[in-house]
Length: 120
Image 1: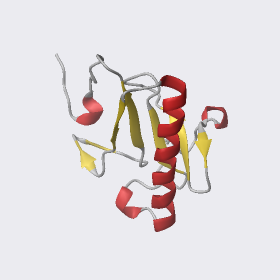
Image 2 (image 1 turned 120 degrees about the vertical axis):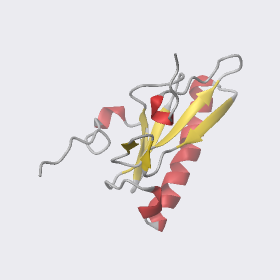
Image 3 (image 1 turned 90 degrees about the horizontal axis):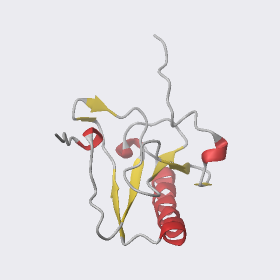
């Protein structure tokens, strides 16, 4: 059986916004708003419920760092923070990734098929 390509395991070091011993903040390849980023564990794991306690604390710390960095860079009015876990909407996430999506006054958040939303 051949291994699938995992973009979260094979990210470009130049894209890293911040990294610690257990995780990293990366820009989202298909952003829904200016500054949309993802927080990933460095270990290939597909479920939030399979990460270790150290990894979980690391990911929460990185969410806070991402929020602070995004406030400095883009001054959003708020954030949408979410992830899918398990078989969701006919697709399964191969590598856990937590989205932090900056929200801006007057700008609708247009979720896409990654969130089970199909728009006409």
